[in-house]
View 1 (cartoon, rainbow, N blue to C red):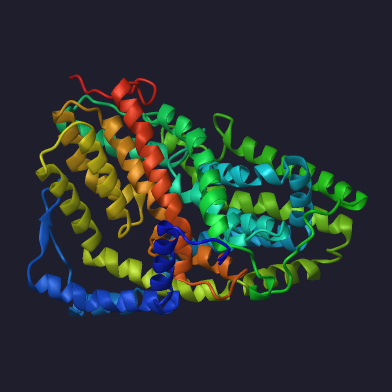
View 2 (cartoon, rainbow, N blue to C red):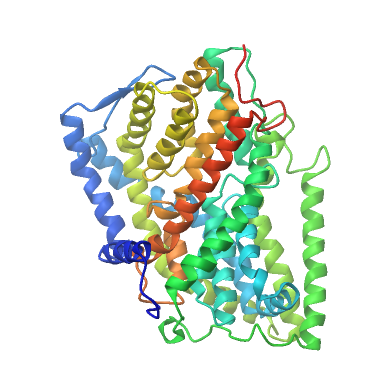
Length: 514
């Protein structure tokens, strides 16, 4: 850390958070402790009779005792299934097949050299934040592909790699619901919102474009916000990077150099290969009867496409990397390809072990019903406050953010919370679309500061490649300014929208008028 100037009050607080967080055990140990702790906790809460009534089904939900005979059987018999079914694990490993060849063939280094020359160092940071925001169109693939690129760019430019990684992650997770296009999340949330709204008004409909206007504007507001936070808070606090702390000596420091004639030729052919791959993907999606369309199905008929997007992205990186390597002779045979992929996967060994522990904890938390109970209690507590207007919207944002620290899935939380919050807001005269927008803000901004975020372990693994002394506290302290800054700016934007009465999407007013 840089000590060339007296530290401000906020810098000292971030230092305290970092020190406290780094005193926690290694993430692997921490997840095992969390998983083990769920067993006695579920037993105690079950014994004292903690329960809630599900707002949609009226079912009484109790805390399930994981130390019961049934619970122990499930823990032992489903441990392997928890691991293999851990969604981030498959996404990470499949994506790394494409990324590995793209990187180790040298394609990524040449491409980044060209990018730095075209964009210039000044606009690298906002470009990374913007790319992170847009990555939500690829569902979760952005959490695997972009953070290591952000870190590599900053490291190669002599800047602290953690700052580059944080800028990307801030856009990808802290601004998760902002975008210029509709993503897979929009139709899912709209469906849940409509179901909740029809509890109050059976004829009410909510479209996937319900929050589109607000989310597009938020994109252009959050990019400069992330840029400012990176330049004025995160990067100065991190100070100068010490390359000797990196886990590997393979980090390339040559992005400021020229792109050779051979590299340009290889990049041109790799680019044409990438365009061909994208064209094939388009043919699989765009025509009315395309293989990756499902007429009348969920997600606007694009569910098969969204389910295939990780594999498609891996292929769209694999083949350009292969072509680049063949032209530059970094790949001479299939043995070179196999070795590059094996070397890539070997770097994932620590994450694979960590994923096993994380998968068990998340499964135990789900089986215990604690996530559902926390969400329902939070929604009921907000209703009990008996507030209205913009303070109620602030309450929705705050509650969504707090619940998100314990329950990661945006759709799972909203499926529960919407049944309470949407009818409540409609009764007060506010539209379901407005309630959904407030929820999405709170759900996004705290993704980046909770260790139980499913992609937190892989983000930490990428960061440790550049500084093996980093711990959980280092990541949380680095990301907290983004969480607070995005919260303030996005909430203020919603406040402006609310007070001017602008629609937040096509045919999506703020006021509910039956």
